Amino acid sequence: MSETLLEVKDLRTQFKRGKKDWITAVNGVSFNVNAGEIVGLVGESGCGKSVTSLSVMRLHNERLTKISGSIKFGGKEVLDLTTSEMQSMRGNEMSMIFQEPMSALDPIMRIEDQLAEAISLHNSNMSKAEIHERCVNALKLVGIPEPEMTLRNYPHELSGGMCQRVMIAMAMSCEPKLLIADEPTTALDVTIQAQILALMEDIRNRRNTGILLITHDLGVVAETCSRVIVMYAGNIVEEAPVKELFANPQHPYTEGLIASVPRLGKRLHRLPSIPGSVPDLSVMPEGCRFAPRCKYAQDSCKQKLPELQTVAEGHRCACPFYRNAREGAQQ
Ligand SMILES: Nc1ncnc2c1ncn2[C@@H]1O[C@H](COP(=O)(O)OP(=O)(O)OP(=O)(O)O)[C@@H](O)[C@H]1O
Ligand SMILES: [Mg+2]
Image (tube, rainbow, N blue to C red; front, side, top):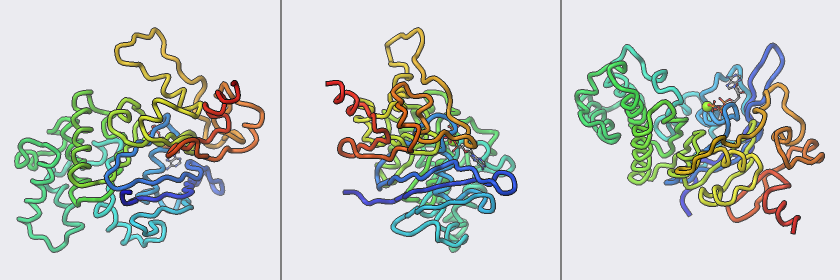
C-alpha cells in the first residue's frame, strides 16, 4: 500500500451570503490521495471542485467561510494549523496550480523574480546563486528549453503553454509531496495540453508526487488518472479506479457524463446530454440532489440524501438504484 498523503473526511465548506445566511458549496465530502497516484476530480461546472481544493489549501477568505470536517495531510490536521504553519505547509508540502494561469502570475515581475520569491519564502538561508540555480532547475524540470532566457522574460512575453509550465515550475519548486492541479490545461490547445499532462505524469514518476487533477475533460482523466472522484452539487456521488469507472459506471450522473463524451472515430449527430442543470446553491433539492435530472429517480430519492456505499472493490456510489442494483432487480 502506498502512503496516504491527504485524507479528507466529511469536509463541508460554507460561504457567508448576506448578513446571517450561509450557503453550502461543499456538503460533506471524504476522499484520500496517496503518494504517487493521480486522482481525477470531475463534475460539471459549479459542482464544488475548486471550492474543495481551495479548502484543502485553506485559501478561502476565512472571515467569510466556514470549513468543518477534517483535512489531514501527512497525518496532521490542516484545519488546526496556525496561519504561519499553514503558509509553510503550502508550497513546501502541498502546492496548487490554479484554473487561471495568467491571473496567478504577476504581469510586472520577471519570471525569475516570481520564482525566486516562491523559493526563498521556504528556504530563507539560501544564497542568491543557489536560488538562481533552483530557478533554472525548476524550469528545466518542466521542459523549458532555454531556462536562462525565460527567467528574464515577463509573463506577457510567453505563450499560454509556457506560462502554464512556469506555473507548474513554481508549484513544484519546493518539491511538494502533493500537487493540486485545477484545470491545468483547459486554456491550452490540444498539443500543449498533452505535453503538460505528460509532464505531470513525469514529475509524478520521478518524485512520487501525489496529484489531484481537477478537470471536466473525461478524456484527460481516462488517459492520466488511476482513480476518479465524481462530484455533483457539492457531494461525491461516485468514486472508482479509472478503468472500472469507464467500463462500469454505476451512478446515473456518471453514466450521463460518460455518455456525453464523443468517442474517437465515432460520428454522432447529437451527443446525448444530461437534461437540466446543476441546482443553485441557495435552492438545493431535498434528498438526492441529482434526482430532479435523473431518469431512474423514485419518490424515495427526494426524501433522503443517499450515502456513498461500496458497490465493488474500491468502487463507491451514492445511489440506491445504482446500475448493478437496477440490472439485478430486472433479472
Ligand atoms: N467565494 C465564494 N463565495 C460564494 N460562493 C462561491 C465562492 N466560491 C465558489 N462559490 C460557489 O460554489 C459553487 C461551487 O463552485 P466551484 O468553483 O467549486 O465549482 P467548480 O466545480 O470548480 O466549477 P468549474 O468547473 O466551473 O470550475 C458555485 O455555485 C460557486 O458559485
Ligand atoms: Mg473550478
